[in-house]
Length: 390
Image (cartoon, rainbow, N blue to C red; front, side):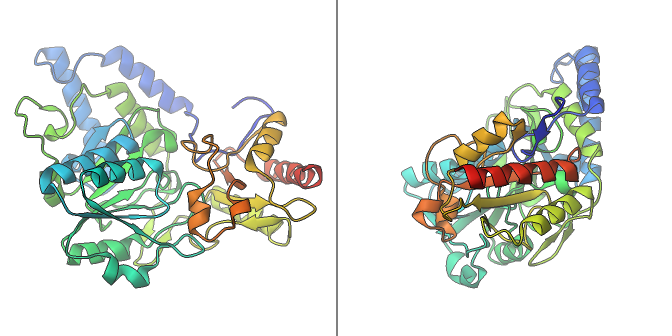
């Protein structure tokens, strides 16, 4: 990372460590042939590819065939939605009303084909109103797709409870797990869902590569009918990006600790990042000019989000703070990197009950392994300057 530059935007993307970059470069040099080719060097690449797939599967208590390599979470989610449409032609899909835009776009495509799209409401902490679950998951529902850890406000959903209900009602369940993995490895065998989307660049891997996790029963609907398609178990076409896949595996090896799964909570392993987040919250909890967004207790371990109020207790527009921080060599964001530059009010804040004048003011700080307390202290000094300045 650049000298004197403080990076607090790990939910947007993460830096490559040296060991990840080295394995990418060596794979480009030594395994550059097409894994689908039938000559000796192509077969060598294919064998290396499947060796990596098996190693990744082992990390997640999964089977190698559970893992489909894609370009990232957005494509993985698109594959699920497209095949749900191809399989059922019509029906009902349930998503939360605080989903990432990739899921909303997929749902809107189905809506144009006369599918019923139900947006499951959340409470003021951004947690799904699970008391409504019996009314929400109807017989017509073909798919439930939920963001596990919300990127803008950090809230974690009770995914195991939802997965159990979906299993009971024979509804397919997809999780957007994009923000989860930098905080620990989960057991795919124990996770109660059919599909899960990941992007490697969110957990120290390269951009342009990700995973769609699948279960044997649900994987059948993803099978492409075109018999000429041989890559990725006939689910995803295109030459596999073997160097990026190797880099993603190397980044997964850097992740420490196991995530524990319970019906109503996700328990992350204790680490320095989690301690830093707790330190941050302790420093701001008595500041009347900072208003937390999202849940305190059910939140991504590296995630802090809040509004900043000026001396008149008016919300300061997020872009002013982001720009001020950038001028002072600090990188933060105002929410999801995919939508924070749109200039539109935050629908997430709106759906958790914030006022109209607050919808442009969310600040997101996401921590990584290289951050420390002195950086947090400097950031909070700059926040105080924002309170006085704006």
